[in-house]
Amino acid sequence: MRGKHTRAHTHTHTHTHNIAYLQITSAQTRNVEYLEEIWEKAVELAMTRCTGRITEVVSEVSKRLVELGRFEQAAEFFEGIDAHKEAIDVYIRAGLWDKAHLLKSVCI
Image (cartoon, rainbow, N blue to C red):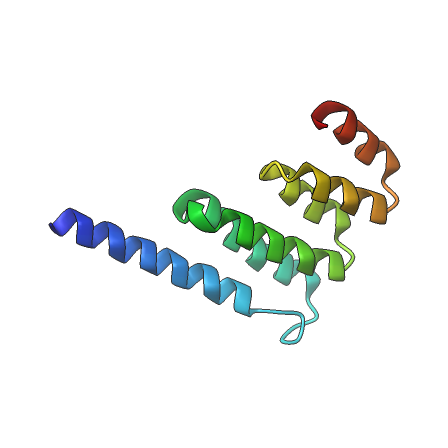
C-alpha cells in the first residue's frame, strides 16, 4: 500500500509542478528565454513523469511559443509527440519551407 501512496504522491507533485510552470506567462515577464526554459521544463516533466498530459502540455507550450515568435521550437515540440501536421503548419507559418517539406515527405 505504501508504494501506491508514494507513486500517487509523486504523480500529484509532478502534476502540480507542471501546472505551476504553465501558470507563468508572457503577462508576468517579457524575458522570452526564461519563459522558454520554464515551459520546456513543463514539457520534460510531462514526458517523463506525467505521460497522460503530454499532448495537452506540448500543445499549450507550442501555442505560447508561436505567440512569442519561437516557431522552430514550437514545431520541434510538436514533432516530439508525433503531431506532424501541427509541426508542418508551424513551419509553414514561420516560412521554414524546407523543414515543412522534409517533415511532410518523411512522415505523411
